[in-house]
Image (cartoon, rainbow, N blue to C red; front, side):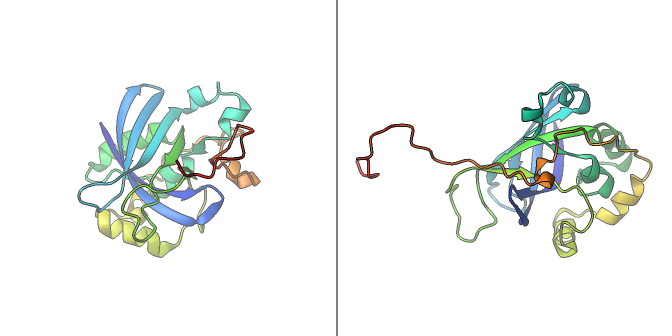
Length: 196
């Protein structure tokens, strides 16, 4: 098991920033799957899923598939992606691997919206941050206090981790693409009014 905490934002809504706990199973050297929970909730609310693949596996994906994935290079080097409670030496070795990985993430519960006590609404694709200034410092500070981590110190400790270039196709949001789900009627019957 691998426990990670990081930041996401809703596709097409860069100001809809959220942070999430990832409880992950390492499936093999190229693939990790994570259940995402809402930090600080009791009982913990299941918020979504993230699949993580190595850069080597990502490089085999067709371009259309790559557009669904976000890079982890900045998340690792910035200290945004953390392993709360993990010794620094262990964290460092894991992050040397994750710096060359990509995530595909869906949130099924907009827990950041008030009075949303059940997972209402259409699931939403989320992206990761790729540079400084995209996430307000107060939001990072709030996360650090809640999770008892220090993003600035973590960033400094990881300065020797060299991120590879982000592969073509990832982080499609930077090029104006928005990934959304919707309800589509595929029938020609227009009499349905939503009432049984």
